[in-house]
Image (cartoon, rainbow, N blue to C red):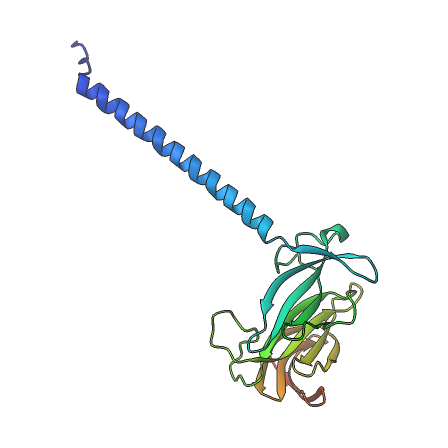
Length: 229
């Protein structure tokens, strides 16, 4: 039985070179993970929603998602229930967000207004709508060639556990608004077929409807059932 060959100097050098490169690679991965963790922590602190106390009730809310309103001098900001009220994670518009209002700030005059009169009800969904937009893109995306926002809609949860909602629509320019549907099951799509009307597909008493809202008087002028069988 022959003896195993003794490693040469070059073989030992190659072995230690490979081990050294492996250690360097491992240290590099650990450094990269540490940098990512630091950046994530810093960005999380930078973009954490600001806590604000209401002047009348002294309740604490958070203000987040501050963005310009396309084609206007307005800035839009969301008002959410604070974590101190048990709303869960409110760092974004996720499923845990408990949105209570929207504030519109006029950057020319410095005046601001709330869309809802108070912060008692939860906003399930909202969207900004262009006045002359034939496509069914209900919310204007950043970076698109969208037209000026002229209208908006809010889906507002009714109090209690029934799961029913109200649909509110409003005009950006005039500030006029109204709840046009109450106690419906849900809103599935909203868009503007022309400058004077808002269209919506809604669920009402477990039936599907296509409805048209006249923005001059905030009335539902057409309601067509949609058969699915």
